[in-house]
Image (cartoon, rainbow, N blue to C red):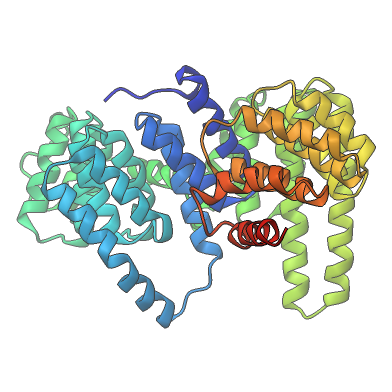
Length: 462
């Protein structure tokens, strides 16, 4: 199945995808996951949505505390969903099985059984790229699982990625060096990869076969989503050599800064990105990367201070971080006045700090961009609400509601705010109309059930 790029998707799908990206960037992973799932139920070919969906699931799972009880409870509660997905796979209902598996992955994206079932479902639904996306992520968490490596290699071969398949079989042979099936699979992969001239035909072990192991290891290190410190050190050395050969290549500086940051050499990372900015002044992406790096540095320092038990110093550093973020964003808005994304971020920051008039000005600009329009309208309404200009707040929320075509979390929140404002104005009939729209699809949303019951009781008493 051919991949669909976000820019080629229908407007409704593209808007949902962009809202998911915005939620992901704000680390609102629950909302991002719901949005990306909504996109994929309508348009399964949008691989970028799957990529961000699984990243959000993994990042969310890392923030949740786990113990033996929660693991057992989760396994038991997930069993019916797993059985359902498994039955769909057995029935050869690929598209339905993929959706069922995505629901499984929401809570445990790296469970090896869920991942393998998802890959089988993707094969049936003609979505091999989607299977590979998740299998590659799972490989980082289960690097010694031979069955997973075999499955990933099988997909690589079907997609014509013979070099990647070869690397999988090399890893399998390292894990089970005396397995004749593994050795044969590696030989076959090498043959397909047009490497039969390297003299492997008389080999009796995987070590005899691999002639460019150092290069393979380097490629493997580069392909890892999460690199170990030792991997990073090797890649740092390689990247420093590349910069020496091509000192004007900005991408090498980006890569080097990222590697420095990973092993907590933040001063080197900041200095490297600054060199890139000096080479390419006025690059908004570099500016954004520089800001993100400095924020990561602040957070690392705060974490270290907390570990050392110096809560006072950690709190002081938190304040410095907040001030840096505020000042830096203000400066970037001034440098790039036409960047709607920056205007939106600036508006949110102003709103969070109770600068409502200034926030209104920012959101009035950012709403002109389709990607930020709905959330800008929502925040405009919240600004007017804070200023007790309730009629203006209702106008903005009504606009947002009219442009939201699915009852997702954003629309529920918009309708809930409309209900709350109407209720505050003692217009119970209008409030009930808004709350009912939510109630009919999600009775458990916030306190909407109690709101409906209270309004009905008030009406009956009257």
